[in-house]
Image (cartoon, rainbow, N blue to C red; front, side, top):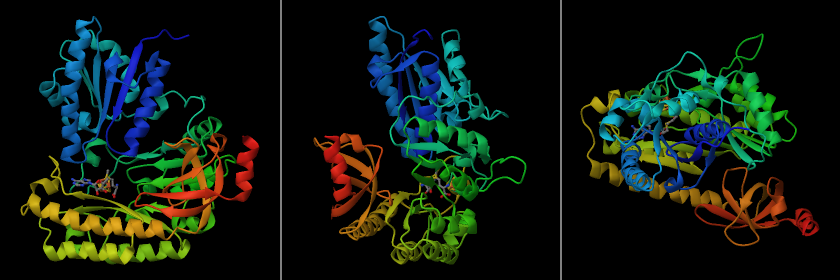
Length: 458
Ligand code: SAM
Ligand code: SF4
């Protein structure tokens, strides 16, 4: 048995890929003897897994480090040591600067080297100035991480299949923080998915910065596409649902579109960022797709799967964006009608081409545009939710709700759904009727057949 090394607290900032990385770090450190705790005050090792995508996200890390400094000092007075590690994209982008700005940090680890975390931590006591590992190692980190544990897990899980990006959108730090595009081999992904399913997982969301650019080694022949990978995963019998995110419009291949009309396990929800509605802005962003191409693509997707719920990312106030250009973004949103969306003010990121562009848009203008856009997006989301009232569909229940006797799950379209039911239904797909809709969730009733399963279980 591994000797207990101490308590571990991980705080995750940013995207789902960071959520996945934190899980894998936690699992690797559990194998090395760390037990997780839910408060930094009790932790011998604190890891901040960070995000650098916008300035606000990066700055949050430094305010968190200020808080941790106080905790470390208080624990020292009680005779306990605390190791503080900064992992993820801020670690990659700022490296040594973190140690200079926050000397409380013992270790800085980039997103491609966290499989070495255990060894690095054991060296922290010996090196006075802090340790930095922000290499892009030749070798795939996934090969060095322990297999996913078999202990029982929640019904829905993330699985990273692709990392990094070569597209170099002019506003984005990802190609610099996560490195070049890399796809994990098919056999590694299938093995991980099978282990997750054995641990009780019923829905897997495949993750990648550009997940639909997936082209992993599949054995003898050509690299496999994302559609091929999804088809193979759909053959795992107890795996009931598949999703993938985030997709780039340029990589939405015909076989992937067609699969949405063919594979029942593939959910009718697609996150497809368009970023801006003006062709001039799209070109300046280096998106390599036009407004018309995006709209055409949406049409083809809706032919393959007429009930597809679309989600997107939009940036307002990209350098030089005029009122008319912003109006094109609003128009685009009206044309597509999104079920959900994420919208952001352009944030100048050091080292990216857009940060050095002239004509930066004033913050008040960005705020006003964002507000106008978000009013429209919220109305579309509410309308989509309202359109579900009276419909029946299956929900995968994931956890108990706040109220006793209540369960929370997800609809095929990724909406949160609340319904009364027995806890034994968690992990099952149950048919429900939608009774009501709020801005962010649905209320439902479990339909007859499934209700008797509830009664039988009681
Ligand atoms: N790969 C995806 C794509 O191409 O659409 C996006 C991944 S990125 C991690 C997530 C979102 O953050 C982007 O779609 C974009 O809307 C937003 N984002 C990235 N850089 C940004 C910046 N500098 N300012 C504001 N938003 C930004
Ligand atoms: Fe960033 Fe996505 Fe563009 Fe890649 S494709 S640079 S991840 S926004």
